[in-house]
Image: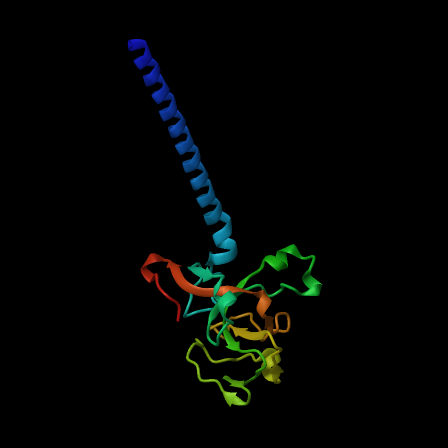
Length: 203
């Protein structure tokens, strides 16, 4: 009887060990899947951290600040005027298709002109379809109109983006960049996450 009980005990212990091993394997798979989602899926398709470089978005965003970019916002709806966005200025351009360094460049700017609109800059004023655009984001008066000195009519999926620091922003006013296609816009800046003392949404 003792022998039978001992065998039964050993059998139960073996089952317990198998259950524990199975539990460890499932737990390991869970954390592996979680790591994969956090490391690859989220940054590629959902949200991504971006670092501001340079003064072009002062006073809204400062050099070295970190922001969170929603990559699904524009899967749900199109960019809206005054959104702050991250975009790749050379994406989809034939002349840069083999320039890997250029294709990796990404900027943070604000949406000023919408598809189908005609944009023109006269002095320090931005005109949209012939009417002055009322906005308060510009840090300084505009001193360079660039290609927008003459009317620029945007295509069906094109946007005109500008930095809030109008005197130090390399943006759509420059012929090297010009109007930006929607496909080159990576996402909407929704949150400043660093420095912590300035944590919060972006105007």
